[in-house]
Length: 466
Image (cartoon, rainbow, N blue to C red):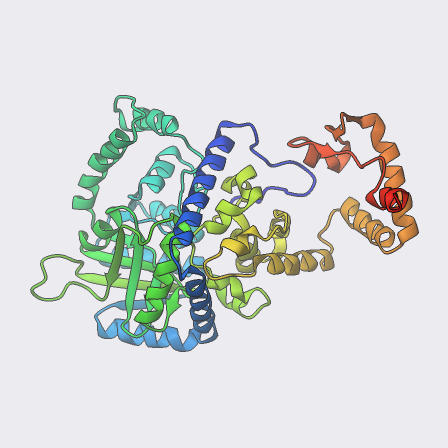
């Protein structure tokens, strides 16, 4: 797993770069679509409340629901496997592929497969793995990693993709989106026809029928799960609801929050392998239910983060994510949700800095389709980092002195006056453009307003009688 980027002490922003422009534009576009879709849906707020209740109920009854799901799925002919960690999950998939003689695998987009680094594990066993989601296909060609939960190449422009296809696929350069899609489609079509197995994620599992639901906007998801003779679905153990009525509610808020659609283009339901007389579908279906740290999260103070339905809305709304991009987080799950999920799944060390990658503005909670209280959980994790002695010395001492000053009106008034006087030599037209030491982490990418010469309190005392 890549090392996390330092958020305290040095700047990580991509501000002013080509990638930053793409991220800012893409995230804002997705957020606008989300807001428009929510405004057009009169019961959106009610549905958010219902979706939250459904997801929290599922987490409270997870052991029972998983057992019920496994029973119903196996009755439908599915092979259900439970994996305690990433190593066991990858080994389980590799064993299934070996037992079925599968050497070429096509994959639909799956963040949990990124989490367990499945591709690297399979490729080490000389199994060819082809990503078939357009964004993931581009990322794989570029030797890159996804920068967004639902938009893997949010950091790339169409010109970047055109040059990549020219270099890697040997086609003439084009930056026309329709032509680029056609090039990818033609390249992948043969892979679908030749593939021995298909691997997908799971958006929702339905306990009452043992079904798994896959939500995509490309036909690759349906081809991945029906064309090869073996289908393997990777499922984070929290991705479950009790019944179909619950799944319907989650689907109502998922697409609207993710891409601003009323419903995604493809909502695939898999309930067992192909039955006698059916013209298509796999001969075998396997579901690998993955823990990989989720049990520890469920037992802790940030358990609510497991209610996440992976729509990506919090990333699009987050000013920090829009400034630094997904790669800056150094982990599969970026943005506000990643800042809680990653330390939960993999421990505070070495991920203790991620909870500080937030302004605590609350935009993430405002757009979350299940109203996850991300800001409060970030504060919990910050407190853990501080209690564990993880903070840099300058920050720990600085916060201690700030606390002593802020609780004393006299000290606070004196500090404001000194701040105004001391900032004068390093400011220009009311702005500080360069700070020394740790302060560079701010001014390297943005200006800082100079403390006012006269505080509002002083002004009020001088003018309230006039």
